Image 1: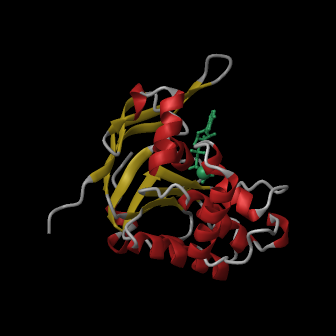
Image 2: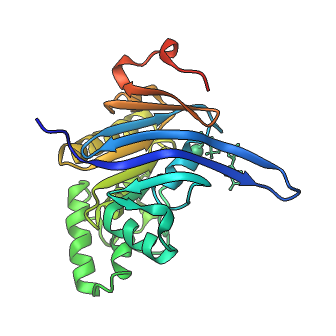
Length: 242
Ligand SMILES: Nc1ncnc2c1ncn2[C@@H]1O[C@H](COP(=O)(O)OP(=O)(O)OP(=O)(O)O)[C@@H](O)[C@H]1O
Ligand SMILES: [Mg+2]
């Protein structure tokens, strides 16, 4: 079988934060990897190792200090903020630990929010929200508010929102971090189903059980990639030095 196309190409990516008073911190150090269409990758590593910094770059919410990032064939560094917003809208969905829902808007409004930027009319937005809610098993919840549903359901609403533009890739930064283990499993089963439908998934997690849903694992430690391989073959002894 021919190898699937590379959708994420990270080359020599470094990220340095410059603080007031002239100090700086190298948070990502020469990170290299590729992800092919259809992969399911878990990014792991200790707190403060640079996982969210990396995810924000992957999700085009931030840019590297040096190195290149090519997403779906497009060099991200050369894009303006407006162009980046377009790439984000067309190619990726992002899911956050704290769901990031608008509490004063209905569930349908939350899910269809990304369509407002494409000037899609209200009726069509609602119709598409209903379809996406079906996909995450929340049919019938369109007109409720986020405060009226459980945390796991709120995360499914956030996943429906991430799906609405039919993304090729979903990035999720600790999507189960605020959920109990049973609800985490439900969310991970949903990600697995979406992956089987062909969506590439890259997620950050601290939990071994959550990472076990992924096929591949990338471990970050102190800003370096110290493991990149099959999740089931990972062991501490296989880690490289930073
Ligand atoms: N905007 C910022 N300005 C300055 N330093 C930052 C900024 N964002 C993150 N950092 C620093 O970069 C380092 C890595 O942070 P990051 O959030 O990427 O870690 P993480 O691996 O996601 O940790 P956690 O598991 O706790 O979420 C930390 O030392 C953090 O303090
Ligand atoms: Mg983080």
